[in-house]
Amino acid sequence: QVQLVESGGGLVQAGGSLRLSCAASGRTFSSYAMGWFRQAPGKEREFVGVINWSGRSTDYADSVKGRFTISRDNAKNTVYLQMNSLKPEDTAVYYCARPNRPRKTAYRIDDYDYWGQGTQVTVAS
Image 1 (tube, rainbow, N blue to C red):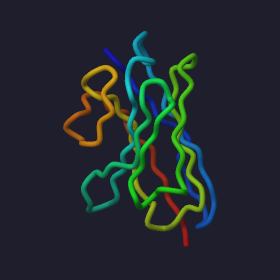
Image 2 (cartoon, rainbow, N blue to C red; image 1 turned 180 degrees about the horizontal axis):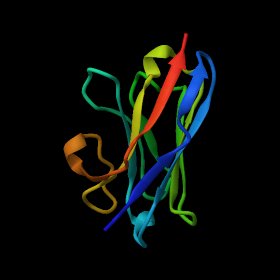
Image 3 (cartoon, helix red, strand yellow; image 1 turned 90 degrees about the horizontal axis):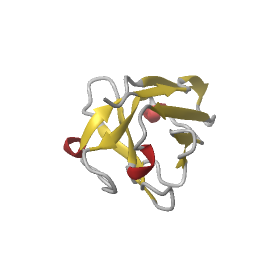
Image 4 (cartoon, rainbow, N blue to C red; image 1 turned 90 degrees about the vertical axis):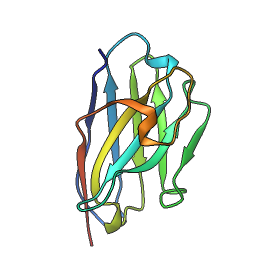
């Protein structure tokens, strides 16, 4: 059983920064890509970005490209989401997730089978 625990959310002013962390249990962390998603009130959960299993490749939604950066430390079983130049429309619950197969870089919600509990990010205007 894999457990994912996010932390680092909070309230920030527009233009500010936050760094989210996602700590994973288990011995297979380094074999899997990791994704970040978010869900705003009244909206569907959406893809934010993904990092491949080695950390050498990342991809992002257009809405966050150039502002958000995903990194990982496989020695610590942790993936990070650095969020800069935050906007009010970034307000959401942010989730990290693990795909359903090793080495798979996934973009769709259905391709992920383990999810964290989420952490709230609120950006004030």
